[in-house]
Image (cartoon, rainbow, N blue to C red; front, side, top):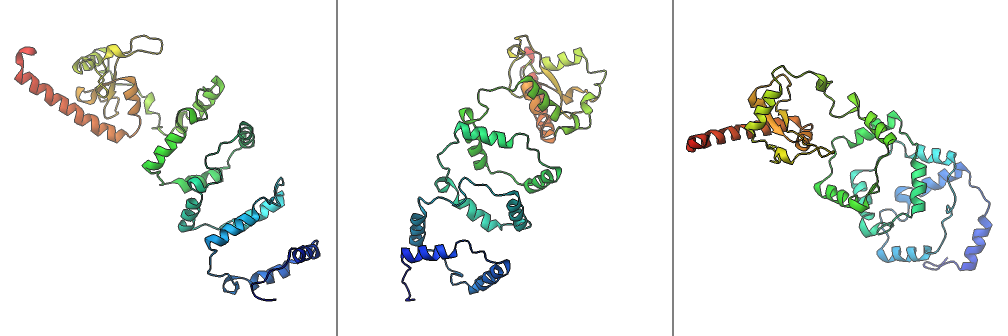
Length: 301
């Protein structure tokens, strides 16, 4: 055959028909694979040009995939799974794959799932429970990984407001109960061995609480809202909470207590060491300020 020449469409059709129904034995497949592996392959170390890629893309346009409307059998899925087990893509490969499918390169860019598609996806995923082994693997993969600030902002924008699938909806009482039970006691990330059930000291009474609120001018020492601005869901007046700075309920000294509103007090359940240092510095600065004011304006007190 002359170099650069091509088979006619008729010749291609005849060759296709002659090969139909023929099954290649596993041994023959292995030999063919070995014969064209690595450096033996005429395309080894080479890459398709952009022009070639474009031509290949155009030639395949409009053709239906042989797997369209079909599904892999369980046996085939198991074989595919076994082949990929233990194989891990390098970081460089992962980055390349990510770049190739980013933004406009993604086939789903600018599109949205139809309500029917969403319903099917939901049905397929409903009732799916990960095995403890798989959960452990997923946990290990995500350990130590932190999303960049840019990624966080993108995620927030993508799922914010009307873009959120739960926008305008509320959980029913049954779901709330299930969610509550899932985060109760030892299942909660903030679990500290049940210290919240420990009793406060005898000195932590109404008189002491009122003294702390008066000392702080009846204002939350984080957001500075006045006690008269605080209300419950039923529009009843709400008092400021006296927070233990070092989180020890038995330490009821005035230098360990500070006034906070309910919202700000809720924030202190996380990063406790940071909050302890923060409020200790803040209280010290407030005390120094009060001493300075008393000295400079004695007639005011």
